[in-house]
Image (cartoon, rainbow, N blue to C red; front, side):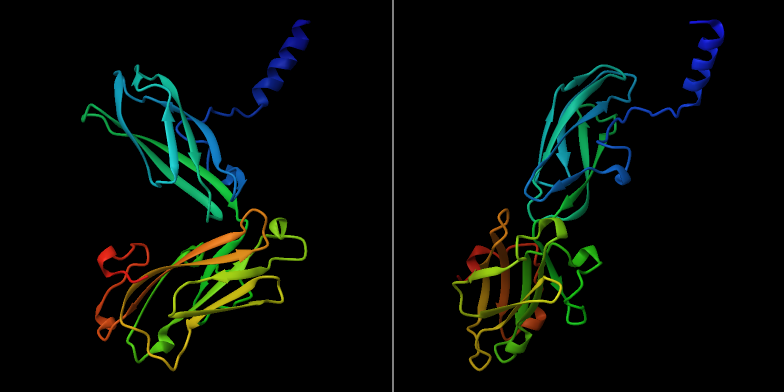
Length: 270
């Protein structure tokens, strides 16, 4: 190559953007998050660097979600050395943008934990959302706090069965809709408190309504943790398990229920 040609090539290379290697994350940021389907686990390998000027030994690896499996190739890292962290995440009952923080704790308390980040997007097979009384059932809630809800808590006095009320919206992204649209083909519920109805809406989503099975008959008092199985025609999500935590008590208004914490076994009634 001539001197003029070499100089031209160097000028072109110098004009190209420089992309730094991604360390301690699977991508540069959430805008580059990979897309996976709900029924497919996310599997990535992250490069992890020891930022310290001394060798370190790894004591423990922890993730912000118990659904994550982690494997670090090396537990002893030389100064500034790198290793690989293999991550697998179960995406069941997820949809939309996801983020996890992974902490790699070191044996030397003088060093901070090495933090790694994981961003990805999940395309739900069947999206399960809770609706408040004011929400439009033809729209998926925009607030993430109402999306992907599979456990519900309700408390009521025996004389107020009208408080037993939940609206649940089932929907598919366009790419996930089964031929002919999403359908509920059955609901399995062995309990006696709740009754369930469902209707296919004009947009193809399904509105599932839970209410007192017999409003004229006061339900027995007690705290129950029950499972409801909604059977669908979606090939990758044929069964959706919903958990209902229901307290019927004269002092129900004075009791706090956390839908994310199962009630004590001694208080449950099946």
